[in-house]
Amino acid sequence: MNIYVMLFDAAPYCEPFRKLKKESNFDIFGQISNCFTTTSVVSMMTGKMPSDLEDGGIGYESELNYKSSGAIVWPWENQLLLCELQNNGWEVEIFTDNEFFGDVISQKFTITYGDIHSREFITNIQKENSSQNKISFVLYNTYHDAIGGKVSVEEAESNIKSCLEYWDFDQKDSFFWMFADHGDFTKITEHIDPVGYMTWAMMKDNTDDPIIAKTDLISIRDFYPTIMNKAKIDIDDPIINSECKSVTSPLDLKRVYYVEDGRSHIDLQNSTSAAALKFDKWQGLDEEYKYSQVTLYRHRPGVVNRKGFPFNTNMLETLVRTRFNWI
Image (cartoon, rainbow, N blue to C red; front, side, top):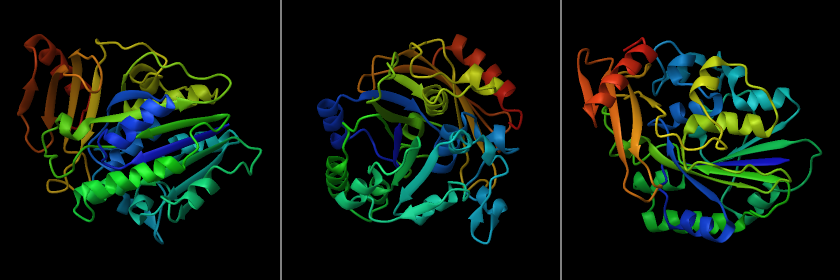
């Protein structure tokens, strides 16, 4: 089996992805992520919140604590999904054209740099050259560059459209997962808001025993149990088993989602805020939704940011204080 995971950093659910969903029969999910790349990818790849792994959480420069000769060795890297798969006989490949991602992924794995938008490169990724099960993680920075002003939004969407056309999304015995890790970083502040954490993911399963999604709203952490279940690997972790769900679980409007963030202008080494939220109304990624949320701040003790119904926010405040003891 081949698993292809594609990160489109900071990309909204824009026209190239909408077209792909319509033409290639993808499932689409609204997704609760964290608010910058490292924390989102860490949660996705471990099923945990950043402060479950690092005391005080993860900031923009936390990885500098673990760099040796340019390589990052996270002390908890054995908890990464990629390590779990590798320990169970899977081949792991990582591809990108941006060296920033070397500060996100543990250097236990080799990162291949190249023109990941080109037909030749993508064709090589999808070549059947191994008898092993294989997971390929491809990290695209295209839309992030547009938000940062390096290219126009039109150029970014055109590049994404062309790139998607080179992928064979009908490849047999293959599973595809595409996602964004956070929203428009120019609009994200110390206040945890949907502009930062409300993202999307897409899934297509061409294997003989395909996953049937029963929800269209997930946490980014749900990727972990979804893939572990797909690979038939047991999960023996109380945090993951209590807070994460495979996409095969039905939508539950009683579910509480957690978000953790670290703003660099406040603290480069630690998380600075955490939130708990639940949805009072959800009808799909493109539809209006209603939610209740409570956010607490490390640097502003006593300040509580509430949104939604008082009954919900009282409960959510208790959960945030209990869940994140560094607040």
